[in-house]
Length: 138
Image: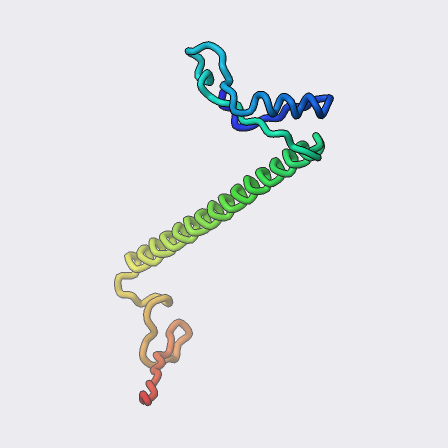
């Protein structure tokens, strides 16, 4: 059990001030074998501090923590979706490649419609070969 900070509520303001003054920088005490035996109290009287200030701060801290966690979860979901999308694209590309290879193995002459276009063009299944001239560089 590790305590970082804590609060004490007193009914009387004078009692709170007296306790803070007397216990501040005093040894916590207990048995000598206790982990906290040599530690010191660090108490401070907070003037004009109300209990609802503390509860508001705790509620705000919880809200901020929850929002950060939600943002992290959202970011992780985006990364996961991106990764799965890329995996799906990769799978589709591999399937397409295997289909093309299977077609090539089926038609070793390469005379199917999906192969390179032929010279001339007349029949329905053939493509006309097009040539594009390059412009001169300036």
